[in-house]
Image 1 (cartoon, rainbow, N blue to C red):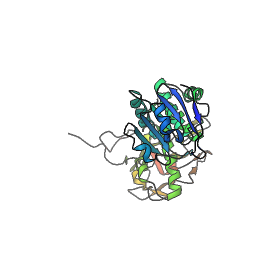
Image 2: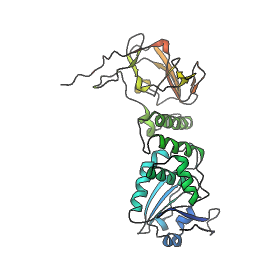
Image 3: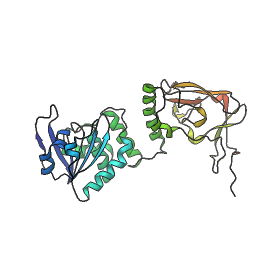
Image 4: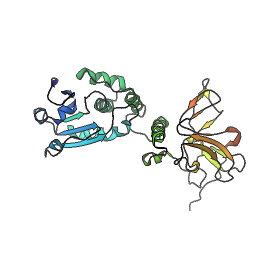
Length: 306
């Protein structure tokens, strides 16, 4: 299918649409708002990634199935977390129809979604999928934040792996940006705060960090966010995921105290982060001071089950 491109009275946004694969079209808002274009391309599904939904004149069309993701074309927007849903929507659309994926110009947001679909379908890297889509629509150009997200998507084997540390760090950075703006951790990021490893568990992690004063477990090794110092794992500061006992959801920064003996064991900062003595800057940062804790593999908090 050749490229459709002409100007209509939609302000600065031209009607622009290209067929990336049979039945999969990538284009502009103007294309999605133009009933003649939709009819000509036999569009049955529309996936919108924009700040505003399509007008009722389109949404009310009985033969169309639509999906709307409210999102701006900014590097710190989280498009990655939507990839599983957008891929499923595209796959279902192509089973018996044609789909138009669009944002405003069809350059960054919608192209990112289509590239993610191509990556998963053909098990490609970002660069391979980008070149394949660009060959069909030469103006595709995801912003740098979306490129980083697509590369992380490849690292997670083309799925969303909530346990992947790179993905956790990605979302921690998104959360940091939100906390900077609203001074509190938004509800949709509460899942980033990990369970307290000091409470009884049926399968506790064998390697833990304890308060040196009272021996209370503060973190498991799996909570550790590792950084490198001259090519080796740095142990000058223990950076962690946020944990329930830290009480970090209501404040942007503060001290960390052992929940049992109240001894100061570290600090946290959502916004400013912390510079490790090795020189590495970590932000956001939730950390234990090595002199305040002990590392041990002696498990004592096993919850007995019968």
